[in-house]
Length: 71
Image 1 (cartoon, rainbow, N blue to C red):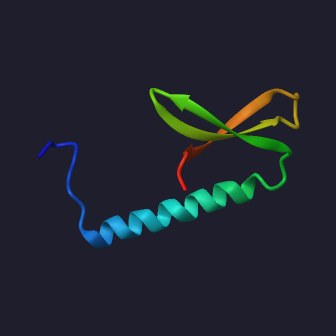
Image 2 (image 1 turned 120 degrees about the vertical axis):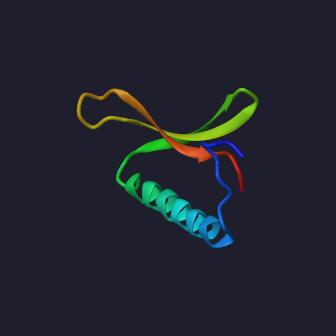
């Protein structure tokens, strides 16, 4: 076992998964006021989802990482 990696108990894994799910939901809720679109991007053979929008201040194009493309 590496000093940087440690197996987590099933309870810790479940708690992490729940927090991750809530964080993703919160992040998506924060996009509700923005006009933009979702896009997929492939990097090193894996597909990821981003939300693209124009910054209300300055009009620059921005992209927010949503997560890996999955169900």
